[in-house]
Image (cartoon, rainbow, N blue to C red; front, side, top):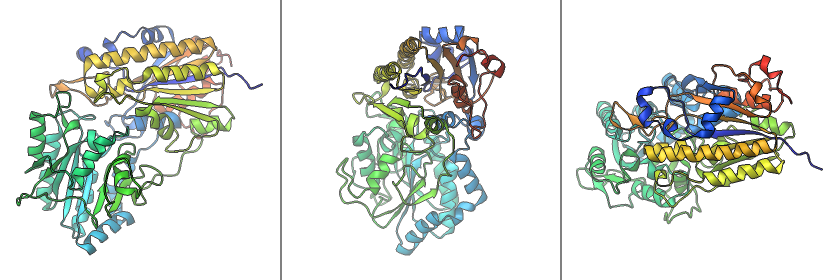
Amino acid sequence: MNKAYRPVVLIIRDGWGENHNDSETDHNAVHLAKTPISDGLSAHWPRTEIEASGLAVGLPEGIMGNSEVGHQNIGAGRIVDQEIVRINKGIESGQVADNPVLREAFDQVSKKGTQLHFMGLVSDAGVHSMLDHLFGMIQLAKASGIDKIYLHAFTDGRDTGPFTGKGFIETIETFFEREGVGQIASIMGRYWAMDRDNRWDRVERAYRTLTGKATELNFASAIEAIEHHYEHPETAGMTGDEFCPPSTILGSNGKPLASIDSGDAVIFFNFRGDRPRELSRAFLEADFADFDRGDRKDVFYVTMTEYQKGLCPNVIFRKPEKMESILGAYIAEQGIPQFRCAETEKFPHVTFFFNDYREEAFPLEDRVLIPSPKDCATYDEKPEMSALGVRDATIEAIRSGKYGLIIVNFANPDMVGHTGVVEACVKACEVVDACVGAILEAVDSVSGRALITADHGNSDKLWNEQTHSAHTAHTLNPVEVVVYGAGCQCLELESAGCLGNIAPTVLDLMALAKPEAMTEASLIRPESLENLES
């Protein structure tokens, strides 16, 4: 007879931060929401707050955390230096000038007399890209004698203010003017070019504009294009940089400045891997069939990092060797079955990123994906998203007795938070709170334990007083950690920490020793741990 486990359940409320600024209370959905479960956890169970941004998660100081970074740190049990840090060092030191992939792209363009295209997110958020990375590579291309350099700009509005894109475009235009090289050939919001939920109608619009097949929206400059969007959004719910429709920039002759064509080189300069995959597939896959692409463009396609194993052979910054003894691997080594669950928007985070960029599951690791809703343009229209499905699958896993560790993500506070709509974010938090309550009831029914936390903030700040507009980005606020369940009320937690402390804490709750490779400590004070029954 198989052993019936009393599981430890790690609940990640994505985008649920702790904002202690009283002046922002009116736009803090976490505070405004009626959350009796969360309130009860804070009042009656061991609780602390930990950092989820900047140096505490391996990012530059002052850079907000994100779901990719957050889940990698949570799963690693250590502070993980992020790709942005490695790339910064490569650009600043000049080492990237000798990168063979970058040199090959430059050489091919020089020999053929063709065009060099850069495409990616243009903002200062540091979540998906950095303008300094773009500028550094353009300067290297210029030094290599390349003069046909074009940028396809993807505007942000999610990790930055919704109307900051014009300023970033102006910064880029100033850089081009100073360097005497470079032009913006197209502009579009990330909504179209950086989808990750198989909404191929969006990706198709982006691809058609990038490759010169779209003729609907043409402008004399990128500034004119984004100003037109600000004044005339396609729908009332699609305002701001994120939704800037794919637009072609025309030259003085009235023709498109530059479309991506066979013989050209393309460099996708985003460093985060989840959102460039779909657009990259349209350029790279010989048998691509998710929309009518036509003949595949014969371009030398380069990605900043390895977005997905086997997707693109030409990668500038390869990932370091996989970390050993991360939480998922260590649990598998102990022969303990584990379960992962999230809806589509966050499924890669509880699997791929949590497992340190491993596509494959560990032995005894089961996964359940709950499809995110597709009957809405933005999630403020459906703030409950697919939380109930995630809840039900998690409860079933708990009651099955099959799993020693269960990891679940609720996407709502983050995905709805990116809309900046306070009422919808309040509903999102309330739905998640109720789902957490139902899961904890299931935990109690099997005498299990739970750790409730978040990967970063978002719904805790929804208004930017400086810009007098919605705040749709992540926050720098800490996140809470609460331990719950059989014997946990006797525990005392450290007063501070980081996401890297979570895996060792989970292991304490499972009565397992921490592997040496996990350099961060448990948040449970050792003297109180002695009172916890195994």
